[in-house]
Length: 382
Image 1: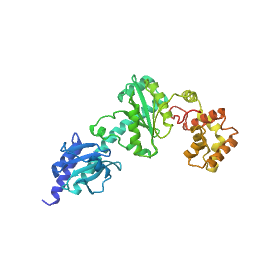
Image 2: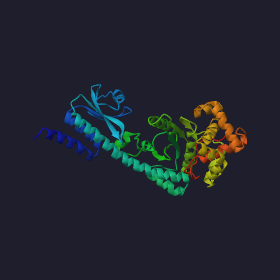
Image 3: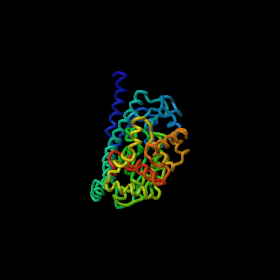
Image 4: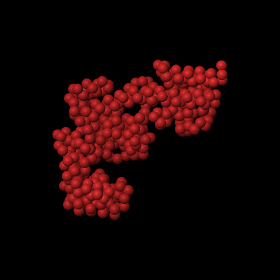
């Protein structure tokens, strides 16, 4: 027997753990059996997912702080990153330096494979749920049929629920692939709350009273993907129609800005806009006609008059706040607003014009079709 044979046998032992009932637990246990060293998998938030021996104490915060590990020894532990679709999501740790480096790296790769397999299963469930939620928003199937489909995912539409929507500027692939709860993956259970991706935003449906707590957790997770995370929370509502209205409310709250925001009392303009969408009115076509001078000017000159107008309305017509939000000088903003008035023939600060412009810019943001699958992003005119 060559010296490579025992090493090959150890690799086979580790590979065989992927067929076990609890593969990651079996992998850590096998690695401990081969090396006699305490071994653990720790997620990047400091949670010990698996540890053998179970009572081993790990300096989790110190180990995670070294992530992604470079191979150096930290707190008398060797580390390897566990990756999911190229992103580090956990750390494989072994106390001491008795584990062969090649075997240790192989074990980290196997751990990533197992997490990827479990994540693919959950992702498939979320894709199906996302399709159902899109139907809920668009009202494309009967409430009875939709309630039945939601029930297959563990949601009782007869009980009150809150809708939480989160947004962050990051590639959609990262938003879809990022595993928020490795314990869910390892336990091979459903997500603790219904979660899906709709229009590149995270949508969660949670029981009444849990919305704010879940929203804060959602914001923490999204903040790890980008610095501009924002989350909106709806009121608690019952039924399929309640979920649809809750989705609107959460999107409306989302537009309040960065951080976590809870839906406030709905203004009349927003209510009328929602009613128009539900009635199937061609709101985007009307918006395009109202904004035509600005859209044509933006396209021809590479300007951002429509975005400037929308931000000005969102900031309640406050020049200083608008200029800050747009990262422009107040004189630049003043020139843009003057040009908007010249092109449209409207006084931007008159109440009727503000209502006109708010409805136009909001409808324009709804997307290529004005239906419930594309929802508003802003508040009504002040």
